[in-house]
Image (cartoon, rainbow, N blue to C red; front, side, top):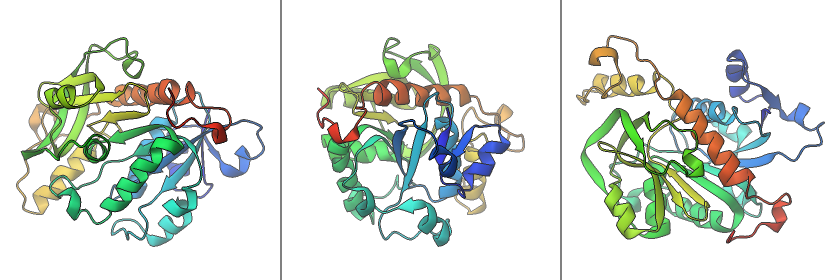
Length: 309
């Protein structure tokens, strides 16, 4: 089944060119189907690019999805036209009284910024706590994982001295877990972050189940036992060239970045990278939608149980 998005959203044409079945709001209004309501809090600077990446992964589900894009209130974007934000994004006040089947909170380039210094930290706290009673399952990605661990579990910010950048091998440690269902025993996933997620810290300090981890990247995929909160510390949504664009951006800015590990063929930035994580990314989002959202959400969202016991 298709994802349902506004008719004029740029992702419509991008995904259709990739032969992705996209249903506009106009057509969807004529179908008597209860789609899953998915809210995406997009914190990335290049919002249109990020929209395309997440919508691409969500589109591979057999479920019909009604997508709503959420912005941080009153926060101006330097990389996305104001007209785009005004046309396709809502503010939190617009939806705070509603319930949603799923919420995705994206990463953000804030790895070296203390939480108290994040301009919209209060809004992040508010939305994260709001999700406890208004969302069946929330998926946090990259920096959003670090933020959520602090807000929900009190884990302090852990930062590495050097940026973790590249494509790393991960081992599935809970093969029977629904979120990891169908994963290969070892799989690749990209990371681009300063945040540190040691597996031992998560196991010792919080009652979260780790499903996949990496010797180099630490805990990668884990969730609360009630499946209300899921965490992916990497960037399974990245396109083949996203890490490349970040590397050349930083190099051109004189930051002398390290070449992303296991990414460019023969570690040569002059050679075009190849996505080696795409199938994993599709499967991860499909599992989250099925086992964490669809199988647990009520048909009538007004009947949502905040605890989902």
